[in-house]
Length: 223
Image (cartoon, rainbow, N blue to C red; front, side):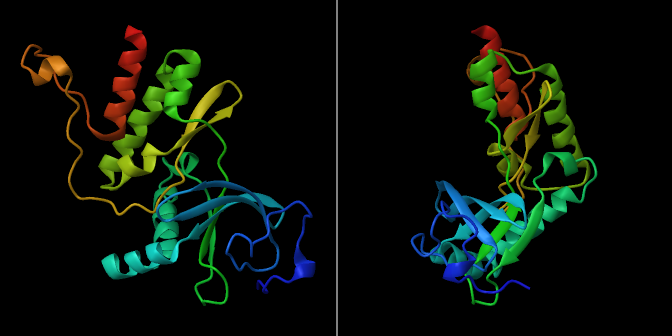
């Protein structure tokens, strides 16, 4: 059971002050660094129970919008979508581990704790090496195929911000952003400029994130 943080509970002297960040957190959570801020909230690198985690703190206006739009608690909504993908054995390795939601009782700030994922974007990988490894494209195809077979929606949004984490000499995509409300319409197929003006008879490529990855790979090959 987490208790409210007191001044004596700060675990690290160089940690960010939650009050300065406009947050009220339970004891045992130390904010190490601010990772980024977006429309729905701010993400921090934090320490919790001996682990480095991502702490997602939501803005009040985002909390209200999700409640009015889909009658959901935004933190619980994101965690449940995270869990649903991770529950698929074929997707577990490509999905950040959800940890817990805090603040549902209103005693602390509403936050979602999740595995902290360090890595780079697919575009940064392309710029670094000048190409996209073939094994990484096969991984992307397997992710897209699994989601299609199990009627999992939202994968294009979830993979849009996925980070590539290096393990030994290989790279693995890891999804961590699950706050998007999945649409029901399939992503449109990718069409080249020549296809759009009718000068190419090549079949159109897949839509969504997979199409974007393939288009990036083709541009890097041309360059």
